[in-house]
Amino acid sequence: MAFPSTFQDLQNAVMAKTRLDPANPLDASKVKDWINQVYARVVLEVEFLTGNTTVALNPNLNQYQMPTQAKRIKWMTIMQQGQNFYGPPLRLVSMDEILWRRVASGGSGFTNGTATHYAFSGPNNIDVWPTPGAADTMLMYYVAYPTPLAANTDVPQIDEPYASKLIEYGTLIDASEYIKDTIATYQFPQVFNDWMYRFRQHMSRKEGTQSKDFRIPGPRYPAPHDRSMDIGV
Image (cartoon, rainbow, N blue to C red; front, side, top):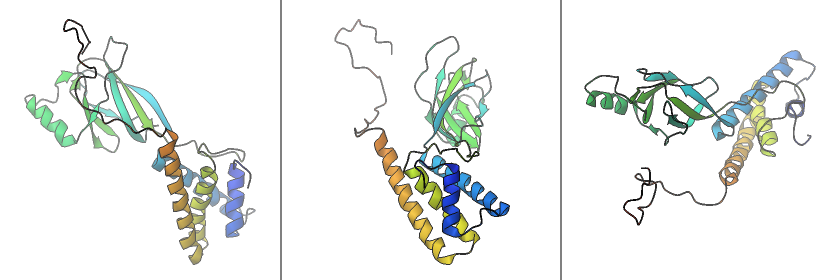
C-alpha cells in the first residue's frame, strides 16, 4: 500500500484481504461506502477535525439550531452587540437548570441579557440563558465530519500511519461480515481497536506535554498593589 494511502489504495487493500471482486460494481460500491463510514466514525470519535462559526442571536429568542456542519460542540462564547470582543465561554448545564433559572425570573422565558449558560433541549436544539436582549453574536467551536473520499486519488485528512490502518481495518470488519468470514470478524475488530488506542494516544500528546491548569472561578487577574488601579473586571 502506498504512503500516504489514497482512496484507491484503501479499496485495493480491503478487496485483496477479503477476496472481493473489484470488477463487481456491487462489491466496489460497498467497499467505498464502508471506507467513508469508518472514516467519518474515526474522525468524530477522536474529534480530529474541528472548526468554528458564528451564530446570530436574536432578541427575545432563546432556542437555536446547531449549524449543519457542527456535530459536537466544544465551546461557545458571546460577543455583545456593539462590542468587538468575545466574553468567557458559555457554561454547559442541564435543561432542568435552564428551566429553573427561568422560573427564578418570575416564570418567564424572556429574562433578557447576555447569554451565559446553555443546554441541549433536543438533538440539534440549543437553549441559552438569559434570553438575548440584543442582536449578540455567538462564536461556536465544534467537531465536524470529514469530506467523504470520492476521487481515487483523495487522501484522508487523518494523520498517518493511523489513517491507513484505521480505515483499512475498520472497513475489513464490515467486509468480513459481508462475506461471512467468522474468524476474521473476531480478528479485525481487535486490530482496529488497537489502532484506535494508538491514535487516541497520539492525539492526547499532540498538543504538548504540559499539564493543564485547573480553572478557578472568579477574577482572572491578581489584585493590584495600588487600590486605585482599574483592572477592568
